[in-house]
Length: 108
Image (tube, rainbow, N blue to C red; front, side):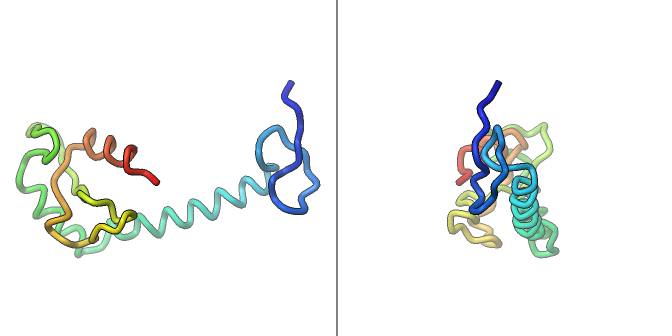
């Protein structure tokens, strides 16, 4: 059995087996989900969609060279690390596996 400890949220008297009580964990998750939705909204703008379509016309992954997979736009320098969102020099075509590998590696 896991020992119970106080919730990490200040002045919360609840005991939990994790870091936060269920109420405060849900509150924290809601904030994270809102922030993520704001970040993702950029990828539906007409400007991004035009740039992405131009880049993927190359027909091959910039990172591994594969040509038989569906391609996506990938920022060379992630926007979260100061890369330009709409600079054609900062966006290349990438297959899903390369894009996901880079996203995992570059995550803050």
